[in-house]
Every structure is written in C-alpha cells, then in structure tokens.
Image (cartoon, rainbow, N blue to C red):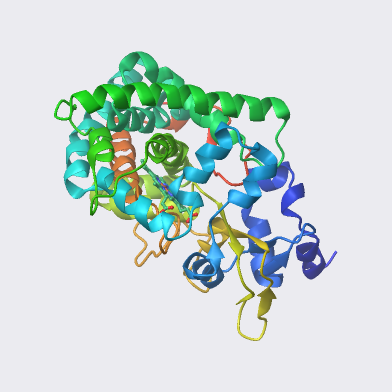
Length: 408
Ligand code: HEM
C-alpha cells in the first residue's frame, strides 16, 4: 500500500497496539502525506508544528465541552467536574477562573515548594538505594507529583494513598470508549474526592493563616480579584483538576526522562559529565516523548490548516485532535527531530501547549523534572535496565506502566 493510501486510511478511533507502543512512525507518515487528516467520524488529526500552534492560538478553536460531555456524563458528578475544570472552558469563564487559580502558582509559592520537592526526592532516593532493584514508575515517578499536589491542597497523610486512584478513575472516564461501570466509578471518585475537599476547605476557612509550607489551598479559598472569588463548585472542581492535570503528566515526564537516558547511554554520560545540562535535558525529554501527546479543540467557524499549497478548510463544528507529540518531531521546526540531544538549543517544544491555555503548572512540572531526574542520575552512578519496560497504552498520554531498573 502506498504511503498516501496508508495515511488516508488512518483512524484515530481504531488505533492498535503498534501505535500505542510507538506512535511516531504514524505521526511521520501523516505529517508528510496527510497533515490535515480527516477521520471517518468527521474529526481531524493535525500533525504539523505550525498547525498545532495555530489550533491552540486561534480564537475560533474552542475548548468548551459542555455540549460534548452531556451525552456521555448526563448531569452527574463527572459532568460537573469536567465542565467546571479550567481547561475545558473558553473566555470569559476561562479568563476569570485562570486569574483566580494563578494564586496557586505565584513565584513565591513555587519558591516555597522547591525545598519540599527536594526533601521528598531525597527521602524516596534513600529508600530506593536500600532496595537495589525497583520500578521507576510506581516506586519513584508517581510518588512525587502526588505528594506535591497533596501538599498544595493540604490533604492529610491518611488520605493521600487514595489520590492516585481518584485521578485514574476520573481521567479514565475521558477515554473515547468507556464502559458504564467505568463511568459509574468516575462519578463516585468525583463525589468522594469532592466531599474530602469540602471538609478540608471548611476546616481551612476557620484557620486562614495555619497552612504548611507550600500550601496553596488558602490562596484559592480566600483569593479574590476586584471582589470576585471562585464559587464553591469552581473551587472544589478545580482542586480536583489540579491533581489530574499535574499528576500523571509529571510522572510521565520523570519516567520518560529516565527511560530515554537508559536508551541513549551517550546522553546519560553527557549529563553525568555536565549536570548543568539538566534544564535543557528536561526540555528534550518533553519534546521527544511528550507526556500529553494529543490535545483537542472544536472549530467554531471554518478555519484553514495545512502547508502552503495544501491548505484544507476544517468546517465549523468539527472536532480537532492536535498532536503535540507529532508537532514536537516536525523537521520543519527541529533539526534532526528523531535524535535525542540533551543540549538542544533552541528547543521550542510544545509539551505544555501554547496560547491562553498554556499549562499553568509548567514551571512546577519543570522544577519537579529537574530535581527528580537530576538527583536520580547523581545518586545512582551504576544505573541499568533490569527487565522489559511497558507503555501504558493510552493514546493521549505517553508514559510507562513499568520501568524496572537495578542500581547497585
Ligand atoms: C510535565 C508535566 C506537565 C505537562 C506535560 C502538562 C501539559 C499540559 C498541557 C499540554 C496543557 C494545555 C491543554 C490545552 O491547551 O488544552 C496543560 C494545561 C494545564 N495544566 Fe499542565 N502539564 C504538566 C504539569 C502540570 C502541573 C504540575 C500542574 C499543576 C499542579 C498543571 C496544571 C495545569 C492546568 C491548571 C492547566 C489548564 C490551563 C488552562 O486551561 O488555562 N500541569 N498542561
């Protein structure tokens, strides 16, 4: 079959294990032969850097999901949750809620979190050093972001073990095909986590000055701009959203980063020789294996995409998949895109999106990446793979389920 035919046969709703294991050859095929690809369900799949940027920046490309989520979630807790989450709203709601949430990410709050991150990492590394052999994902990468977000929200120790599962159940319900059981579990997770947060918020209202280092819940409860505050529903649902947005993505960054270094020993050695490369290394991990591979938008009017001479009009109402993972390997933007270069400069990777929805946690995610990967490499000079790694098999997120290593 010709490349053109293969590209035009692609269906985002019918991807197989080969795509989940390694989507990059398919991205390349599409970018070259069918960059504004029409799927059989009428949605489009964008793979060029310029088109992905345009879809994130264009005012007619909407993030609002109130209409799309109705048939899937009814009026239930998942509907309330997702439609109140910042990321699924357009201006003016988006502008207002984003401004109020930004209280959680001020430079002062981030500076307070840095020693907390270092402390968590040092404790985790001490424990792993004693073990000698372990799984990077479950024993390391996932532990950090959950702890950080729990600290930010002031979640007490005894409840923290539940957070990872809540996040999985709530995000799992967003997969394209979901069983009624999974939807019911998602609804229950929103309700349970919401009830816990309501309790914490009620306690916190009575002790406005009593937070731990790095805690941001009070800023979200009491923060106001021109007399405007988050409503009680916006507050609870966006606290849940912070866990979901910053948890798996950051764990994927750390897991993918360590996995890339194991796959490219020359780059691992380069980082050991010059630890100051950690910042550009993290940018390269984000580019090469972007934790969020595929975003989405809906065209609210006809919008043209594609290269000069091959423009395609996407009609109003069409759903658009924006492939960040493909854009980050576009040869029109990056020299030798299939090569890992931890010193790559410039590196305008799009892993955090761009435009008005650009990730609010991008500085925090980067700090977590620098500390977690930098300290890991420094602590374990004799790091090596100790078994098969496995990708978790969800097209929108790129991350591993297991990454066994030995460090003695
Ligand atoms: C390496 C880690 C991360 C990656 C790759 C990542 C990626 C992204 C991307 C691509 C978006 C834009 C979605 C869109 O335009 O539709 C986004 C939005 C967002 N992220 Fe992150 N994220 C990461 C970590 C975090 C962390 C640690 C937090 C907070 C604790 C966070 C909070 C948010 C929020 C609040 C938004 C919504 C912004 C808006 O809609 O205006 N993220 N993230």
